[in-house]
Amino acid sequence: MDFLNQNNSIRAIFFFNEHNQLNGALGRQRSSFAQVTRKLEDSLATNNESLQKLDTYLGAAIEGWSQ
Image (cartoon, rainbow, N blue to C red; front, side, top):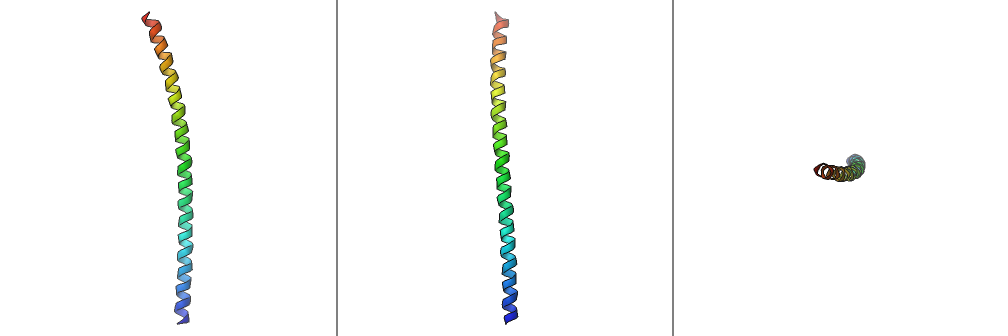
């Protein structure tokens, strides 16, 4: 009977260890995903600013040509 209890305890330790490792990996994935999301948001904001400047320059050029 002691052997069965020890075996179950060892299984429980391995299970919780694996569970903790998976949770740690999931946490790292979430952190990595958040970093990529922030970089994408920054990049989109920069692209949006560039497009707004281009729109202003093209608008001015078209007005200049049409006069």
